Length: 262
Image (cartoon, rainbow, N blue to C red):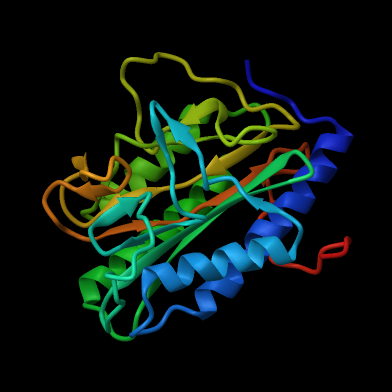
């Protein structure tokens, strides 16, 4: 069942998403050559704490594993769930995906972006541009009366028309009092499902295209978390949390002054 947020739930989502977006914006400013991904993760920890929030990533349990970092920092061929490390030093030409998920007052804010360091190849620059454009095209589909499949179709058609591929192993999702709620939001059309959920007012959706320069296949590294492209090509990831309303989709993960004390 897809949770529908009431007035109080929406207000709390606005707070948590504002914090998540503000933390992501601050973290993005620190991305530069010579910085380690561990440095970035520790900065994310501090930024989150400054707002009286907690990382929803840290300690997140999957099977018998707990995620050991405060944010997900994925470099180049890493698609998602990269773990900050002192050994991973950022260099000119890298691309870095920053995924910040926080919990505040019982609700989750979730957003991500991919940042180029200096000059990247034209093809990688195009990968980032198309992935971000796919996100905003997808958000436009989050209209009352449409279906989740309309979001999926829009992302896949746009991305593949530009020669890139959409990841199949991870999908977008509902978000609210839990990090992962119904519905699942694939970035591709799932042929096994003839109909998908109808979009109604009060849904809060984490829409997040994950796009590979090469093939869509992925694999998970030995740390049990870091997902990489199977062919070693770069991957990009952009994400917003969106509220569905009668007036159209509203992006909640926008940095802005928050109406509460840090």
